[in-house]
Length: 287
Ligand SMILES: [Zn+2]
Ligand SMILES: [Zn+2]
Figure 1 (spheres, protein in one colour):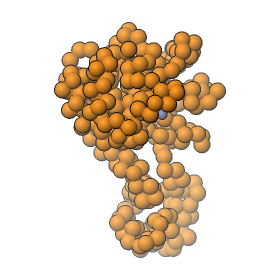
Figure 2 (spheres, protein in one colour):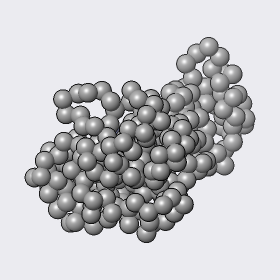
Figure 3 (spheres, protein in one colour):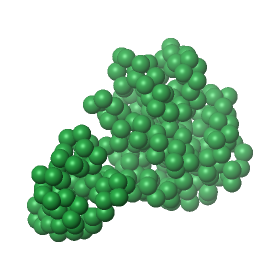
Figure 4 (cartoon, protein in one colour):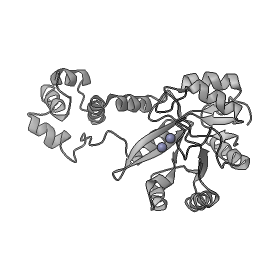
């Protein structure tokens, strides 16, 4: 069993165990330092923190963000960010909101361009309809920023215009920037799921500011780990490890801490986090 596990899910996203259960089980399995990395939410953190404190664990903040990498769904792990960072939490709120969330992103992007309309007013205009660009366009006309709906599209909302939000998800570059702004670091989760050309994809992400690679992943054999170590060395990336525990009991699943993550590699990862002075790590005891 490894002493660190930095990829864990709970009932806050699609795991089947509570944050408390995950922390207590991690401690029972010999894990000393860890992160709860639920999908697009930090809702489980407060509960996990209380359980981790009782169990004497070092818990750092974590999340697994779904991003759109050239049409492929990719996962970016964030560690050690400020949990109360307003733009990060605003994004996560928007994700929960679906189409309403996308509308709010449009409103936020417009505000960044000095065009301020009220998201609530857009919602009122939409009424019972599923809110979308036409309603934002009408709010822009109403607020006097444009003469017509057509002008709203040609200036702001149409394809390729500044407030054209095509995706519900962040681009990888946006996710990395957001995690950095929040004081954290960004790692590529389970790189081999990116496909056979994952080394090229990881190189692309590295050019966008990626900090590290999930190198010690649940069922990876020695050869796979060695390939990831070589890739991270080549690209000068740090290395994390995690079980991606969901509690589902699928054939490739591993228990919390049951990962090919040697103590020296755990220590190296923790040293990397300490060097970056990620919040949360300093207050806790030594591993
Ligand atoms: Zn994932
Ligand atoms: Zn995961």
